[in-house]
Image 1 (cartoon, helix red, strand yellow):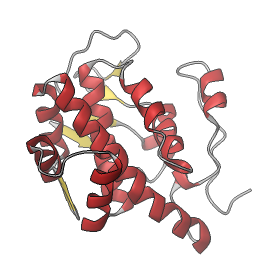
Image 2 (cartoon, rainbow, N blue to C red):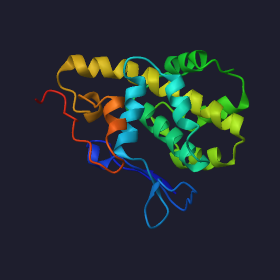
Image 3 (cartoon, helix red, strand yellow):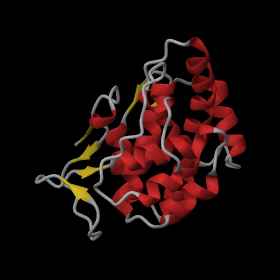
Image 4 (cartoon, rainbow, N blue to C red):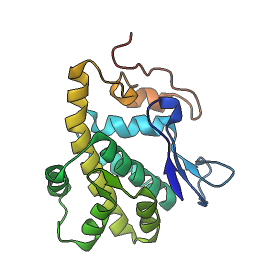
Amino acid sequence: MLRSTDYSHPSECSIHIAGIRTRSNDVKTTQRGRVLLELRDVIRLNLLVRDRIDFDGFKRWYHTLYIPEQAALTCVLCEFACQAGFDDATCRQAIIDAMLDPTDPTVIQAQSFCRVYKMDVAGLYGWMLQLEDIKRVTVFRYYIYLFGHAEGKTYPACRDSGQCNHWWHGDLPTQHELDAAPRGHPIRRIHWPGTP
Protein backbone atom coordinates (compact mmCIF):
# COMPACT_ATOMS: atom_id res chain seq x y z
CA MET A 1 0.00 0.00 0.00
CA LEU A 2 1.27 3.43 -0.89
CA ARG A 3 0.72 6.47 1.22
CA SER A 4 2.44 9.80 1.24
CA THR A 5 2.93 12.32 3.94
CA ASP A 6 1.74 15.89 3.99
CA TYR A 7 4.27 18.02 2.13
CA SER A 8 3.64 21.08 4.29
CA HIS A 9 7.13 21.00 5.80
CA PRO A 10 10.41 19.83 4.28
CA SER A 11 11.17 17.37 7.06
CA GLU A 12 7.95 15.51 6.24
CA CYS A 13 8.74 14.80 2.58
CA SER A 14 8.70 11.13 1.85
CA ILE A 15 6.67 8.71 -0.11
CA HIS A 16 6.20 5.33 1.51
CA ILE A 17 5.75 2.20 -0.53
CA ALA A 18 4.96 -0.89 1.49
CA GLY A 19 6.41 -4.29 0.74
CA ILE A 20 9.02 -3.20 -1.81
CA ARG A 21 12.54 -4.55 -1.90
CA THR A 22 15.17 -3.11 -4.20
CA ARG A 23 18.74 -4.03 -5.05
CA SER A 24 20.06 -0.50 -4.72
CA ASN A 25 22.33 -0.02 -1.71
CA ASP A 26 21.65 3.70 -1.37
CA VAL A 27 17.87 3.47 -1.35
CA LYS A 28 16.39 4.52 1.96
CA THR A 29 13.75 2.11 3.22
CA THR A 30 11.89 1.59 6.45
CA GLN A 31 11.90 -1.72 8.32
CA ARG A 32 8.71 -2.58 6.46
CA GLY A 33 10.45 -2.10 3.11
CA ARG A 34 8.94 1.27 2.27
CA VAL A 35 11.00 3.31 -0.18
CA LEU A 36 11.66 6.83 1.09
CA LEU A 37 12.26 9.72 -1.27
CA GLU A 38 14.88 11.94 0.33
CA LEU A 39 14.39 15.66 0.75
CA ARG A 40 17.24 16.28 -1.70
CA ASP A 41 15.27 14.32 -4.32
CA VAL A 42 12.11 16.32 -3.68
CA ILE A 43 14.15 19.50 -4.09
CA ARG A 44 15.76 18.15 -7.25
CA LEU A 45 12.34 17.32 -8.67
CA ASN A 46 11.18 20.90 -8.07
CA LEU A 47 14.36 22.41 -9.49
CA LEU A 48 13.86 20.44 -12.71
CA VAL A 49 10.58 22.30 -13.36
CA ARG A 50 11.34 25.65 -11.69
CA ASP A 51 12.16 27.76 -14.76
CA ARG A 52 11.37 25.26 -17.50
CA ILE A 53 10.69 21.54 -17.78
CA ASP A 54 14.11 19.90 -17.94
CA PHE A 55 13.13 16.58 -19.49
CA ASP A 56 16.75 15.59 -20.13
CA GLY A 57 17.57 16.13 -16.45
CA PHE A 58 14.62 13.97 -15.42
CA LYS A 59 15.60 11.31 -17.97
CA ARG A 60 19.19 11.10 -16.71
CA TRP A 61 17.94 10.76 -13.14
CA TYR A 62 15.29 8.18 -14.05
CA HIS A 63 17.78 5.90 -15.78
CA THR A 64 19.94 5.71 -12.64
CA LEU A 65 17.04 4.20 -10.68
CA TYR A 66 15.76 0.67 -10.20
CA ILE A 67 12.17 -0.07 -11.25
CA PRO A 68 10.60 0.48 -7.78
CA GLU A 69 12.42 3.81 -7.52
CA GLN A 70 11.27 4.79 -11.02
CA ALA A 71 7.71 3.99 -10.02
CA ALA A 72 8.07 5.94 -6.76
CA LEU A 73 9.43 8.99 -8.57
CA THR A 74 6.56 8.84 -11.06
CA CYS A 75 4.07 8.65 -8.18
CA VAL A 76 5.60 11.72 -6.56
CA LEU A 77 5.22 13.59 -9.86
CA CYS A 78 1.57 12.50 -9.96
CA GLU A 79 0.96 13.63 -6.40
CA PHE A 80 2.74 16.93 -6.88
CA ALA A 81 0.72 17.60 -10.05
CA CYS A 82 -2.47 17.09 -8.04
CA GLN A 83 -1.19 19.34 -5.26
CA ALA A 84 -0.26 22.07 -7.75
CA GLY A 85 -3.68 21.76 -9.36
CA PHE A 86 -4.47 21.24 -13.00
CA ASP A 87 -7.39 21.12 -15.40
CA ASP A 88 -8.20 19.23 -18.60
CA ALA A 89 -6.42 21.86 -20.69
CA THR A 90 -3.24 21.30 -18.65
CA CYS A 91 -3.52 17.55 -19.28
CA ARG A 92 -3.90 18.11 -23.01
CA GLN A 93 -0.91 20.48 -23.06
CA ALA A 94 1.20 17.97 -21.10
CA ILE A 95 0.42 15.27 -23.68
CA ILE A 96 1.30 17.59 -26.56
CA ASP A 97 4.55 18.84 -25.01
CA ALA A 98 5.56 15.32 -23.97
CA MET A 99 5.02 14.33 -27.62
CA LEU A 100 2.66 11.54 -26.66
CA ASP A 101 -0.31 10.13 -28.55
CA PRO A 102 -3.53 10.94 -26.64
CA THR A 103 -5.09 7.73 -28.03
CA ASP A 104 -2.24 5.52 -26.76
CA PRO A 105 -3.78 3.07 -24.23
CA THR A 106 -0.81 3.61 -21.89
CA VAL A 107 -1.39 7.38 -21.85
CA ILE A 108 -5.12 6.92 -21.32
CA GLN A 109 -4.50 4.50 -18.43
CA ALA A 110 -1.89 6.85 -16.92
CA GLN A 111 -4.44 9.67 -16.92
CA SER A 112 -6.95 7.49 -15.08
CA PHE A 113 -4.75 7.50 -11.96
CA CYS A 114 -4.59 11.27 -11.71
CA ARG A 115 -7.70 13.25 -12.54
CA VAL A 116 -8.59 16.74 -11.47
CA TYR A 117 -8.97 16.52 -7.66
CA LYS A 118 -8.67 12.73 -7.63
CA MET A 119 -5.65 10.48 -7.62
CA ASP A 120 -4.87 6.81 -7.06
CA VAL A 121 -1.16 6.78 -6.30
CA ALA A 122 -1.20 3.23 -4.93
CA GLY A 123 -2.86 1.99 -8.11
CA LEU A 124 -0.37 3.92 -10.25
CA TYR A 125 2.55 2.46 -8.34
CA GLY A 126 1.35 -1.13 -8.69
CA TRP A 127 0.63 -0.64 -12.38
CA MET A 128 4.06 0.93 -13.00
CA LEU A 129 5.78 -2.14 -11.54
CA GLN A 130 4.04 -4.35 -14.12
CA LEU A 131 4.76 -2.25 -17.21
CA GLU A 132 7.42 -2.88 -19.83
CA ASP A 133 10.28 -0.37 -19.78
CA ILE A 134 9.04 1.60 -22.79
CA LYS A 135 5.56 2.01 -21.32
CA ARG A 136 6.95 2.96 -17.90
CA VAL A 137 8.96 5.72 -19.60
CA THR A 138 5.80 6.91 -21.39
CA VAL A 139 3.96 7.25 -18.06
CA PHE A 140 6.96 8.96 -16.47
CA ARG A 141 7.16 11.40 -19.40
CA TYR A 142 3.45 12.24 -19.07
CA TYR A 143 3.73 13.01 -15.35
CA ILE A 144 6.87 15.11 -15.81
CA TYR A 145 4.97 17.40 -18.16
CA LEU A 146 1.74 17.34 -16.15
CA PHE A 147 3.58 18.38 -12.99
CA GLY A 148 5.74 20.86 -14.90
CA HIS A 149 2.75 22.63 -16.41
CA ALA A 150 0.69 22.54 -13.21
CA GLU A 151 3.59 23.88 -11.15
CA GLY A 152 4.42 26.38 -13.90
CA LYS A 153 1.05 28.02 -13.27
CA THR A 154 1.06 27.68 -9.48
CA TYR A 155 4.60 28.84 -8.69
CA PRO A 156 4.38 32.35 -10.18
CA ALA A 157 0.93 32.91 -8.67
CA CYS A 158 2.14 31.83 -5.21
CA ARG A 159 5.35 33.83 -5.46
CA ASP A 160 3.52 36.97 -6.55
CA SER A 161 0.79 36.67 -3.90
CA GLY A 162 3.20 37.17 -1.00
CA GLN A 163 1.12 34.68 0.98
CA CYS A 164 2.57 31.40 -0.29
CA ASN A 165 3.30 28.82 2.40
CA HIS A 166 4.71 26.10 0.13
CA TRP A 167 8.26 25.42 1.33
CA TRP A 168 9.27 24.23 -2.16
CA HIS A 169 8.47 27.70 -3.55
CA GLY A 170 11.14 29.15 -1.28
CA ASP A 171 14.84 29.71 -1.83
CA LEU A 172 15.92 26.17 -2.74
CA PRO A 173 19.52 25.09 -2.97
CA THR A 174 20.90 24.78 -6.48
CA GLN A 175 21.56 21.40 -8.07
CA HIS A 176 25.28 22.07 -7.61
CA GLU A 177 24.77 22.61 -3.86
CA LEU A 178 22.71 19.42 -3.65
CA ASP A 179 25.40 17.45 -5.47
CA ALA A 180 28.11 18.85 -3.17
CA ALA A 181 26.29 17.88 0.05
CA PRO A 182 26.98 14.28 1.13
CA ARG A 183 24.02 11.87 1.02
CA GLY A 184 22.18 11.84 4.33
CA HIS A 185 23.56 15.30 5.15
CA PRO A 186 20.84 17.75 6.20
CA ILE A 187 20.14 20.41 3.62
CA ARG A 188 19.63 23.61 5.53
CA ARG A 189 19.33 26.23 2.81
CA ILE A 190 15.56 26.17 2.50
CA HIS A 191 13.79 29.36 3.43
CA TRP A 192 10.04 29.69 3.68
CA PRO A 193 8.71 32.31 1.29
CA GLY A 194 8.61 35.72 2.94
CA THR A 195 11.23 34.86 5.60
CA PRO A 196 14.85 36.07 5.69
